[in-house]
Image (cartoon, rainbow, N blue to C red; front, side):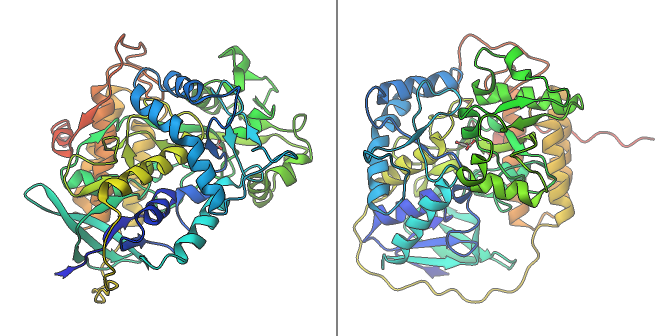
Length: 514
Ligand code: SIN
C-alpha cells in the first residue's frame, strides 16, 4: 500500500484546479484522466459565470432567481451564501488571468440567460468562458509547486475504514488494475453524469463515475433524480452533442419548428427565455412529433454569430450547417446533474475524510432546475470552501510515484451504449413508473455482464440512484417530469439516498417466458 500526505483531488475541472490553488501551499495530488485542461466539462461551458457585479443587480436578486428556478427545492441559505460570494470569485478569476469581456469603461459585459431577471452572466468572447477560465487556471496550477498532477490516471474507487474515507484506488485511464493510495483527505471534483444518457453535451468521460464511487463507498447522494436537459444541443449526430449556448436566445434567437412556428411562444410567457426545463420539454415534444425544432439566429445575430460565438460556429461548420442562413437543428440533451454527493456548506460529504465540489456534489443550490451559469459559480464557491475546510497548511512532501499496474479492460463499449439507451428511454426528459422500473432492470443486467469493472459499477451506481430517486418522487418538479404524476406536491423536499437504499427499489427480473 502506498501512502501520501498529499490531499487527493479526483478530477481536473474548474473546482479541482481552483481548490488546488486555495489549498496551496498544502501539497495536492490531482488526478487528471486527460492532459490537464482537457476532458473536463468546465472547459466546455459556454455561458459563463453568473454573478451580481454592480447595481441595479444584487446578490439578493440573484438568490431570488436561483430559488425561483429551482422549483421549491433550493436551500435558500445556500443560495444566499453562494450569490453573496459570487462577485469576489469573479475578481479572483480576473486576477488569475481570466479574460472576461469588458466594456469601454472597464465594466464586465453581462449576458442575459433564461430565468435571470437581469443580464448577469460574466462571459468571455461570447461562448468561450469555460475554455478561457480553464486556460488561465491551468497556467496558474502549472506554476504552483505544491500541486502534483497525475495525468492519464483516473480514480476508480474510494478506500474506507470504519466509515472513514482513507484513500483512493487509481487506475490508468486507458485501462489497468487499480493501485491503492492512502491519503489524509479526498476531494471529489470529477463532474456529473451526462454521459449516462445517449444524447449529452458533456465530454465523453463524464458518465457519473465520480458520484458512483462515492455512492459505492456509502456516501449519501442528494437529489439524484434531478437531471437537467439543455434545450439547444446541436442535433448534428455528433456524440457528445455540441451546445448552442442559451446566450444566443438571450440575444434574441428564436426556436422554430419545421413549419416555421415559434412554438415556445404558446408554452410560456417568457417563450425562449422560460426556465430551462420548460424549454427542454418544448424542444423534446417537437422532436418526438417529428417537427424538427431548430434555433433561428438569422435575424437576431446574422453574421455576428461567426465571430461572437466561435464554438457554436465551429460546431455548425463541422456539421455543414450555415447558421447565418439556416436555423440550427437542435435537440434536448442531458447537460447537468443537479444531484450528486450530498455536502454541507463546507463541501463535506456524509463520510469523514471525503469532500466534494462542482457537478459531482449536491449542495442545495440548484434544486430541481439549475439556473443558467450557476454551475461554474457553485464549483468556485464550494471548491474554496472545501479547501479551507480540509485545511491549507502542510509541509512539503515527496511526489507520489505509482507502480505500473497490470493492464485490465475498460467497460465494454456495448454495455455502456446499452446503459445510455436505457437511461434515455426510462429516466430521460419524461418519466413514468414503468419506464423507470425497466431502466432499473436493464441496469442490473448490465452490471451482471461485467461485474469486475469498477468503472462500469460506478456508472451503474449513479444510474441506479437516478432511477430509484425518480421512482420515489411521485410528482413532477423542475427537470423531473413524471407523466404518471404530472402535479407538483405543495411542499418541495430534497431527496437523500444511499446506494444500499436505492438497490432495494430494483424490481425483480422479469420471468423468462415458458
Ligand atoms: C449555456 O451556455 O447555455 C449553458 C450555460 C449553463 O449550462 O449554465
